Length: 127
Image 1 (cartoon, rainbow, N blue to C red):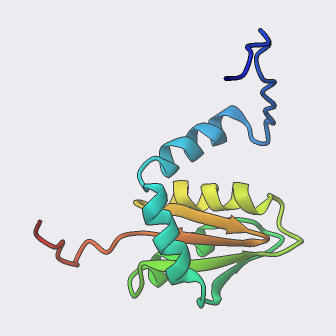
Image 2 (spheres, rainbow, N blue to C red):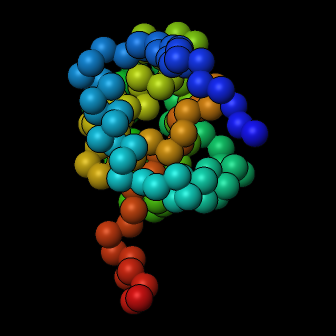
Image 3 (tube, rainbow, N blue to C red):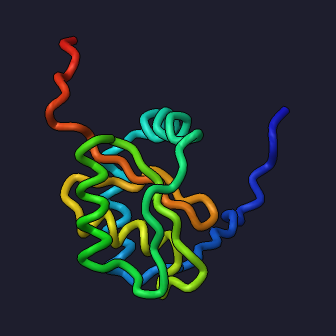
């Protein structure tokens, strides 16, 4: 027939990793890309090597400038977060996305963050 209702709701387990302000940034950043878009971008980024390395100084103005220059020639890039960095890789990725206009975090895998910014000069295909 069917399953009997037991009357108990499933237990939801949540873990809070980030401060509320950073989690707010994360939720607004991720919402602009659909899961299919992120999956496609992850596939495109598979063969890329990290261009910028974040070390013990963390995210600095020089780091943001280097990423800004890198985004002039490409839409998708990877950033390596070294063990000596003051923030965790996920937090560093969202800090970078907040510091650069139009940049979105595609994924964080290990200590490598994949960032995406659509090229404004490219023509969008007509539907």
